[in-house]
Length: 354
Image (cartoon, rainbow, N blue to C red):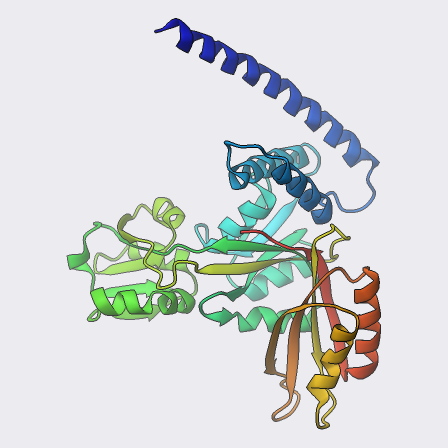
């Protein structure tokens, strides 16, 4: 070993020693902060501010995304020194929902898989867990209707969002394509890989199941089946990859929301989600959105869903930039409340990053 290499390694060892001391010093301060807090131990707005600040002053060569992941785990470990937090997600183990939960809360949160989106909401509403992570929309296939219906029907709030790039893989027991007679996956994933499957597995039967992880579990027991799921699911269920990144849209991303009994305070870069309905008069939708324009509030999403209260009546789901406590947003919401037949604030929360 050269003298130069020995010197570099000695410097790395010295830095590691300092990092260990500093991380534990940080953990001790986090404990002090936790003891001084009242209410929730998890404050999404504060954690978002910390991560943004660190990313903004990162000189490299470590990519900002890697730095954020590293600090998310440090904060997760610090939280676990107190009571920790519990998080329900759409299971079973190996789903993209689990990946989203880990991305948001780190690997030290107590994760609870649930059989359905409804079950996630029930767990949070019954205070069996502190938080839930559910998919709300996909950049390719659009919104998840059941999540929207439950956000309307329950008193729970959105306190965070997670943007997760979704890379689909085809997998089976052998890793060989020749044995595939049927392909199992969630409906959304089958749709996201539609053209790829048409070109390479046109004769294989496509079977929708409750989740990608369940597809992987079923494929692990059936030599004629393949599953579309994540690499994590392949590892969990002992499957071999036939092909990776088979989604038709390379930028395919799923947006998840974090639900809780509370939303988040202002972080400086926030989003507010609303659901509303209009009076049945001409120009009602235009009139409903006028307060946003008048107060300079940008709308990032508008989607309608049947209201289920009468034929041809709709609820409008709207995302706007800013926090409900921002002066311009508060004024716009006050006017909206006077114009809308129905208005529900689903929560304000930090804007998620890919």
